[in-house]
Length: 295
Image 1 (cartoon, rainbow, N blue to C red):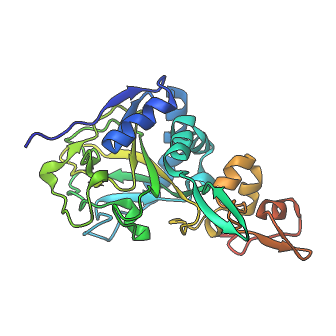
Image 2 (image 1 turned 120 degrees about the vertical axis):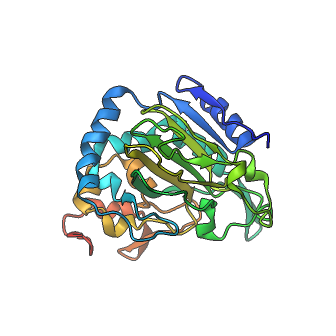
């Protein structure tokens, strides 16, 4: 079968070029996505957590020779830089924030949906791990293709080690974002997202993909995050997993992307003194504590 390859662009490319390739192919590899200093910092900040984490117990999907850790924004300063990297964040905004119109009385309003950081995980595939079943990540929200006519998610996989076909590089079906929900994906249609450490794969939530099988002698480690439309439920519950003290330290933009904001459509507000207010205002109140503070 003549399988379409993934396109690789350099991190010096514009957001517009990255978006163009993603719209066409469903995904793109960006070489040199982070500098060497950031890559080494991520390895340092996340390596200890991974080493202490047992392998999974889900042989079917998550893997029983795979380590996974979440709460990445709580654990890594460098991960904040990855989440806010314009090639990821601005591409997500251009791909996901498709305006819709609503009527408010006699006013017809054009409204762009907000986006939020939905999931963060470091994933380490050890030797002996088999293929992950092919899937679409927007299935978490039961997204329908092509009925909904828009994308729900843009995801990143940043290579913390080299990704090769032998060691379990993420397998992707380019162009599958254009398929309807009746077409079944097959491994024969996939290509490996081979890339050097420090490079990144960006792909749409509608693209079929899965972790590769590791036939090498070394683990394959990557950092994944996803931006979702903010009217969807977060895949990872940041409100319980990230301590308030850590949230207070983050840039305001990162706080908003974690859900500490009220969206343009009024989702997510809190009541303060009888008013619907921004949740970020709670962070300025010394008396405010979080239920999951000691998580």
